[in-house]
Image (tube, rainbow, N blue to C red; front, side, top):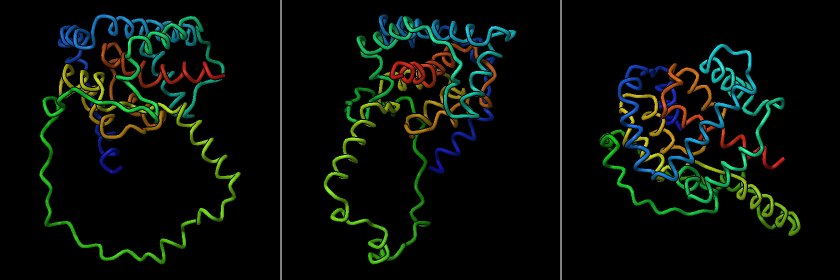
Length: 253
């Protein structure tokens, strides 16, 4: 967890608009080729839908940057969508359906019950791991099992009906819970085709290491980590990390 927090703190100070301006387009073409034409078009359609969502919900903002900042501030402050937001249901259904039919969703995020076998060699796109100093590892001694057992509720103390209910609730959460796929083509492509000094590269590293970051924490990272919302990679991250989550929530209402 400390490693994740340090990475997120790093994101707060990263801003590379010049890199995105001069190197973004050729790298985006390579990124799209890696994903495949069909998936790349689906992702671009989602970006276009998100742009229209912002225009519909923030009509008085002067520009795209202001609209995105207002959108992120809502999530950062409340960790949930604004109940007044308007959604294009047809667009939502098209995105969700296309993400599923092309297999793009599984490359970006997985449900708890899903497994995934990666064919990507992440050592090619990640910096070498730091050496571990074993001299600083101390013996923590033996665990006091008596203390641990005091905090454990024996299963026998929970009646059968309650056990079934707990299991059903857990299964329902698993059905609905999406987590970032740190081994998928999407994260790999972000690492491979975005500059290593960029916000996007640092974010992809954090997402690969920790796939359970709250939307509010993520939004703060985007608010303070980059000022260039025109970067095509940043715009795709805004869709996959926030907008797709929102439209799946909206669909369940």
